[in-house]
Amino acid sequence: MSTHWALRLIHFLYVAFVTIASRVLRRKRRPPKPLQAHRSKIPKHLCLNLVANNDMPTEETETAFLQCLQGVAAWCRVLGIETLTVYDRHGVLYGSSEDAHRHVFIAHEISEDSCESELEYPLTPPLSESSGSRSHSPEHATFPADLNMITMVHLSRLRKRRNVAVRKQPKRVYSASSRLTLHIVSRASGKPAIVSATRSLLRSCVSGASMSDGTMASKFPCNLTVSQLAVVLEAGLPSPDLMIIHHIGGMKMPYPPIEFHGFPPWQNNVIEFQCVWPADYSVDDGHFDPSRSESLGTPVLISETAFCRALDEYSGAEFRLGR
Amino acid sequence: MDGNRRYARRLGKQGKEGHLHGLKNLLRVLELCLRLRIHCVTVYAFAIENFNRPKEEVDTIMDLAEERLVEIAQRGELLDKHGVRVNVLGRRELLSKSTQAAIEKAEKMTRHNNATILNICAPYASQDEITTAVESVIREAIDTGNLDGSTITQDSIDSHLSTSLAGSPPLDIFVRTGGDKRLSGFLTWQCCEHTQIHMVDTPWPEFGLFDLVPIILEYQLKVWYEKRG
Figure 1 (cartoon, chains in turn yellow, brown):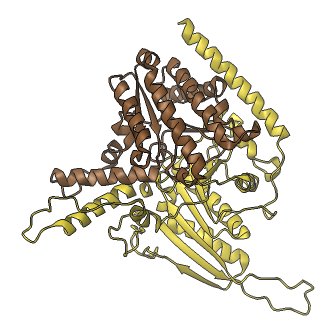
Figure 2 (cartoon, rainbow over the protein chains, first blue to last red; figure 1 turned 60 degrees about the vertical axis):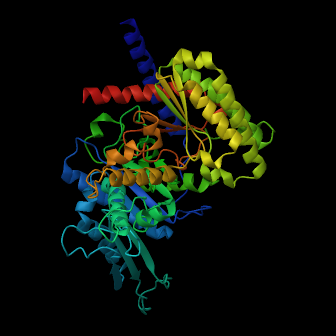
Figure 3 (tube, rainbow over the protein chains, first blue to last red; figure 1 turned 135 degrees about the vertical axis):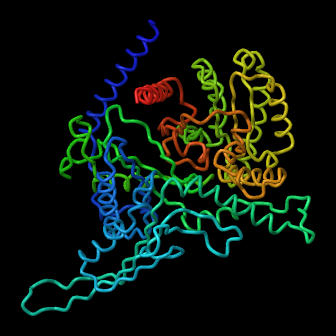
């Protein structure tokens, strides 16, 4: 009994220490560089891992996810990050892919006044078809697998604005094109996709090993290599460079450690990951302090400050790749 | 166990000398874990990718590994007291014959122990482990005549991972020392869900009780919150 109370006391002291330390660090924390500031490296492929609060209604969760996705997609375009993967464990965004399309691509077209856009769906049926839009590994893979993901590619060309005599605005400089590939994935794109690949390989081995008289060859004919499995699993979803994990329900003190919430394990080999902590929110962003208990019932959107801090940390990271 | 070379360079020594400090600290931390009654500890000693390092450094690591495995095997009293079983997981065929012999000796000496498991991953890579598990599952399906794939599930692949074959329970806590925030091909299947991830700035040779206690406290909080629902 005394051990139990001693442990509770240790926990109380630990939580108190962490709370005070966190508030002190928040005051001392330097703001991150602005979004368009120079950084030594920028990820080519960014992943946003959105974590829901179990108590939040599904509609609110979906709205918050879509808003976070829209914000991050816009920042990716500004920085020239051409591939964005958005992950949520339960497939909320996978189920609202049309809304995701609207938030990411249509909203962008309206805001940039672009007149031409091409939407490509590599390996995926168009959204207007049945709701089972899925991505499969390429046909040249000897054992295709069901990756349970949606990929959208958007290429927009900005219209060149003509000079108008009465307007005294400088000429705008346009980039030739702005391309963004969006992958929408869920837990089903991880371990279940590996199961799908395994079953597919079994079928491939069986059909390859059957003898002319219908009996099985005695020796297992298939020797699987890492690169063969990688072709199947990574063709649809390559590994991101940076993963930002964001809890839309906010976090109570003491903030829990990072978890991946079922993110595809094959792709999580060398991803640099950053968690958005409540201390990363800037008051100037207009977001309330999510560590306050009265605000925990409202979704917390990812802020530009938190996004920039994740980029700053990524640009400072050292990749030794085993060396 | 990251940060050995940076620790050594900070002391003005050659990077490869940090591995000696790292291996010494492994035994210290293992003893801490035993005292805290942690049933299973898995350490990442050497990645398959580490063979890309300069030959001299790789040879140093292999020599140290062989010496320490022999030392671990010879510490029969400590291992028996805590019932530690040593498993070396990964592509041991890539190691030298003498290192393989030391591994087999250490595993044989501790095979009868069951209370605590120490998994030493060397040389190891998660994608390689997953690929091997996939191949094993297929082989088993063919051997048992289950050709429709119905026996192939997440649980069956999980059970063929090297950690599961060594009798390890699900992974509760993942710790990386040295400050880097990535998995670098270590236990990616095992830690992708329900595992707390801790990235600690302390380099491995300096990792100790003061780093471990907050990690354990965080885990206890999670268990309490989950019990309360």
